[in-house]
Length: 240
Ligand code: NI
Ligand code: MN
Image (cartoon, rainbow, N blue to C red; front, side):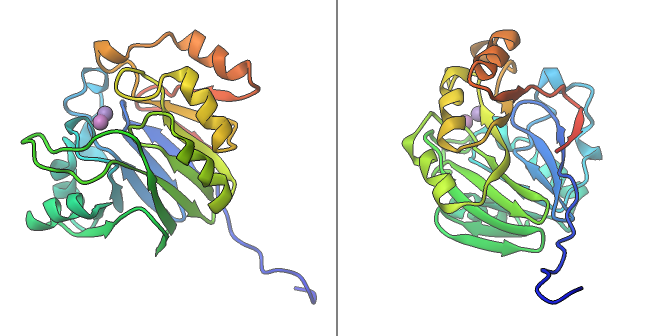
């Protein structure tokens, strides 16, 4: 190393596997992060064995069953893993004996894979028994392999404009595009402008009748603005 040279940051491509609906496994910062496990109840993901998913962390966006249905099953297969969620989700799983890390919206928290900021989502959040699930949330995850935004279930909101002001440039963002319960793909095009990210991975579409979309039209809406919409196949892994 010559004087003035910065130490080289070892960075690898980010690896993302799609398990349907809003469930993704992201391998970044040397760890495996699972988002919103809802697999066994998803007829489109019938070929996925939820018990074969290995991970180090689960990050939960909110308490609706189409985001948490498989949490307890997968945690039993990965007993060393840590559940990350807003205070009420932490309290729910902590009371059941699982290891949790409580967060709320605000500043960064450093984990061993990178740092995490919980950000706003415009939606609702309750457990299937009707009990309060706290506020719905999204995450910005910043690792040595790059930063990404997982929006969770959300409508389009001006709060997304804060993300490029307070977070590093995003390598990609996972945005809901299915409409009815969340943004539709047209709103998601605007969201991608708000967050200043041209590479979007779609989620929360096709699973139920309410959220079936036309893939070609959705891709075209992004392409028109010079952006890429990636619709992964269930079970597919891509590197970014
Ligand atoms: Ni929801
Ligand atoms: Mn949902």
